[in-house]
Length: 309
Image 1 (spheres, rainbow, N blue to C red):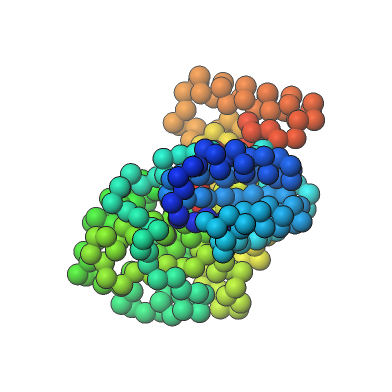
Image 2: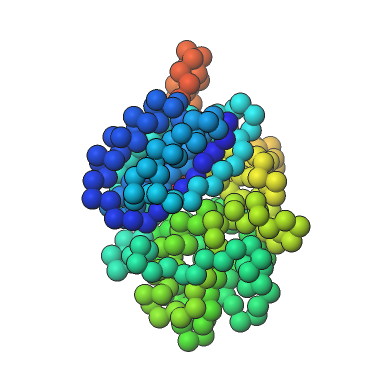
């Protein structure tokens, strides 16, 4: 199984109509994953056989709105499912920021490739910001990057509002696949930051293209069943807590607080007995469905896989 990721900020007047068409295409090609549509564009992560993914992309690019949309491909872990079902939905925003003045289709930061990005990392006059959330950053990041300590992307503007454009004159942003940086860089430009850069294609494209001069340390969190990928873009050593979506190390799994599908050391003290019982029942239902041979079981999918890149 391969994985294809893509996004584009572009005006879509008919997101519900487009959603129905894409849903039918994915069903015909037996793809799984997530497609999010909004009036501001499209964001997707799909898994399937390589030929099926290529056919889907060809059909998508036949639409003039997506004629040259970049698509990033990565490898799955053997025949294990990357996603358990196909979900196509329409939202108010692709990436929830709740700031109406931000329009990534109009203006974003300058895209830079791996070699130029490494140059920015070495420049003491550049402020490097990790635009991801704290549970992602815990797995790996670029040394020296600022950690906004956000729990969701909606908190990112508040972090930026604490920075001074007159002090932080040059800012470089990065995220998993690039889409959050599109919106984040647009926000910075709207708020007086003059020189804003973003890592083209995000961490995943950087790892795929940088070669031996890889500055990223650790694993990269991904929003699917793999949980993380290493510097070879292969499945990492982490698993996910189905209760709180936190990535778990071997030490976390060995903790007495870890109960499969129910709790982990990061959430056990925050759960009520009722919540733990609910998680356990959800896991039981998922096992029953799997035993019946129902291939796309959404209940066992970590909450993070329903988020964005």
